[in-house]
Image (cartoon, rainbow, N blue to C red; front, top):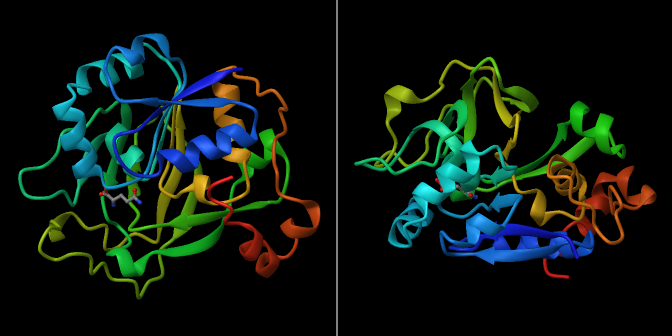
Length: 252
Ligand SMILES: NC(=O)CC[C@H](N)C(=O)O
């Protein structure tokens, strides 16, 4: 069975492993630097990036993670995982936090605000649809989500999200650097690819739509045992209300 590593320090690693299983791929929990030598594609899940960074420091994972990315092995960061991969992060806690880097962008750690400002929305995902087919949109689950404020020339934008003009950032005033808020932006970037790096600000592992996972597996030339690009049934994809009822079988 094909194997994908999932960084399993904290956060939604079990949910990623469950999606991989549905695609006929084995997700291996990664907690030690030496495991990164033998694994090829790697998912860095969502969770809480400062906590995850502390654990990664404790287990001495940063050098091995950086080497993994620099070697050109496929890596996908979702939410906190995106923050890990960014070259620059704003809105950090006092003292900052260690990043893996490699992705030429600036990410705002809690762009959309605090936990209670989490939301779901249908995102236009033309590149994903062109590779994986299926519905024109993907349901983005944003949980105290980051957003990408700017990207370098090598970065391909795969999805963005309009910021309502009345949406002033009001996230955790105690920990945010207000000067660095992207106050005047009308759109922020929420999914990107830069060569071997894929990053999403939302949580595809919390939906039943497996297209981002399939897309990433193709980046790593991983073929599942029952490879199928999407598990979203046709009748569900055309009905958002029904889709939201059917979209959260997190552990299967
Ligand atoms: N759902 C998530 O991964 C949230 C990430 C969070 N904003 C952080 O800083 O870690």
